[in-house]
Image 1 (cartoon, rainbow, N blue to C red):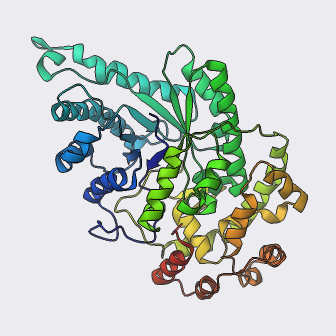
Image 2: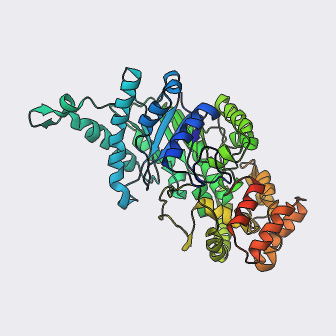
Image 3: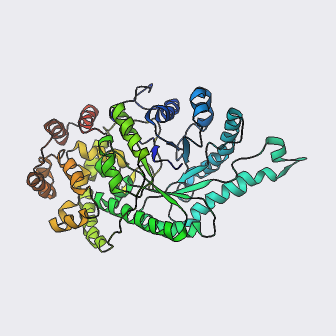
Length: 476
């Protein structure tokens, strides 16, 4: 069973989960969170984020010890999965050796599971490798585990071999899931994967496409189109190699980050029909009624993936001028984003993963906060990030894009509800967006408008940022 839903630790939630001891979730809270995701929400997989921070590497042991009745009935590694996200040594030099520690913990987790279940069980057998840009990076992690983590058990220490003294190491190999985040990596993901899979006899291969960071780097429309192109090329590769490929797509609640909410799961599954796994981030879990969340997750779990359509590559020419405009507008807005980001609350005690440019994101020479705070800051200013760059496109070009990006007008309409026309008097390039808001007949949210007007006028307070977020249903 390849999971359809993956719970993640992305801190995009407005409201604090009932089990949290503090507004910012801590390590012990996340053990409870994983159990809650499995046992109550019905999510089939939990990403466990080892990348760039301290994390509880005894998650398997603690889950089995704290919730034995549940996990005797529902086996870790079969019915539910824990999938670590590991540092990429090619990019994250300071955290490079954490990769070794994480891989070392996999056989230890298997020992706990063997004691618990009374038989050989691998509760963890896959890892996610972020910021993958070439096939050798995937190969290195695969071989590092197979040859050095598992292979060392046959080395002799004084008078015995390691496995005779310490015990057998299991599982014998792991699957490595590449996470593609840059434009070049996403568009070439099928070629990178083909290089890696050549000569291997895998039962299947999973592949992860980022959605938030590409939106931040290249704009909403480009992020969607690049992922859709990649999904089609992966579908072609699957047919060519006769190896099942199961894409994961990293979607959040804001349209800018995927528009994956309990009310919009049908539209997102239709947008990315060939994606196997969808990420269930914190806002999805905690900013909606539990009944709605459970029902939506059940729907995704019960729906089979379908084929996706081809993307006309000529459309990329339109995206070039869109990205150019998006970049220009972002440069103007960058100082305001940085200022408002200081008032956006953190929802996890630890920083989530180190990205392509470190904890702060640099986009076209501008230092910016990471995707969630970036999105929250722009919405707080009454300038939803979805609308940036749109003025570069004609009505005809938008229509052409919508033939591929089916939810385009729905996503733009959602964003325009929270666009503050007063922002157009300060930033002249937003004048076209104010016209679009009128022409599309979008009804503005007056409460959100009132709050963002205060923030635009310099009253930048966390309470206002949170109040606005509660109106739209996500932090960022």
